[in-house]
Length: 240
Ligand SMILES: Nc1ncnc2c1ncn2[C@@H]1O[C@H](COP(=O)(O)OP(=O)(O)OP(=O)(O)O)[C@@H](O)[C@H]1O
Ligand SMILES: [Mg+2]
Image 1 (tube, rainbow, N blue to C red):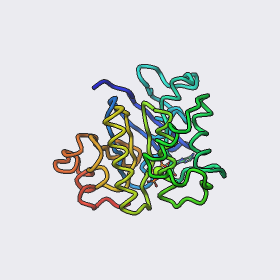
Image 2: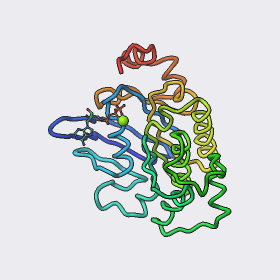
Image 3: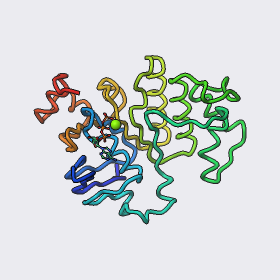
C-alpha cells in the first residue's frame, strides 16, 4: 500500500488551545481507518483537516505528495468527500439531492445511472419524494449515495451511523466495505461504536485530548493494545 495522507507535527489551535496535536500519522491508500475516542478528543477536527476545510495551525499535512494549504487545487480537493453526522439535505426531491453534488462538479449522469446509486442505498422508491421527509436512516443513506456518486478517492465519515437502527447500520457498513473493495476507496471513519470499528476497519486509532494515542491493525488494537489509555478504552473504562 502507498501513503495518501501524511501528517507531521500537526497542531490545530483554537483560541490558544491545542485541540489537535499529532506527532505523526500516515493514512494508506485503500485502507479503512477508524478513529475512536472520547467526545472532544479532536476527531471531527482531524476530519476537517483531511477534508481541507481547515489547514493546520502548525506542522504539515500532505495529500498524495502535495502540501495541503490554501492553494491546494480544486482538482485535488474534489478527490475527497465527507459525510457529516447530520447531513444537510436540500428541500428538494431525493433525486435532486443526488444530482446536486454532481452538478457542482459539472457532471451529469443519465437517469438509469442515477438510479443505480439510489438502488445501492435502497432508496429507489423515494426518488421523487421530498428529501426532508426521509427518516434519519434514509437521510443518512442518501448522504452516503451523494458522496459515492462523485467517485471519491477518499471518503470521510463522521459518525455516519449514530442513532440508526441495526438494519441501517449494517446496510451502511456493507456499502462502505463494498466501496472499499471494489474501488479501493480510502475510508476514514469516525465512530463511537467500537464494534463498528472491529467490523469494518483495517486499522483503528485512538484520539484523546487531541493526541493520537495509538494506531494499529484493528485486531491488535482490540486484542493486544500497547498503550494504557487504549487498554482502558477497549475495556470501556475511558469516560466519554
Ligand atoms: N471552531 C472551533 N473553535 C473553538 N473550539 C473548537 C472549534 N471546533 C472544535 N473546538 C473544540 O475542539 C475540541 C475538539 O472538538 P471535536 O469536534 O474535534 O471533537 P470530537 O472528537 O469530534 O468530539 P465528539 O465525539 O463529541 O464529536 C472540543 O473541545 C471543541 O470544543
Ligand atoms: Mg465530532
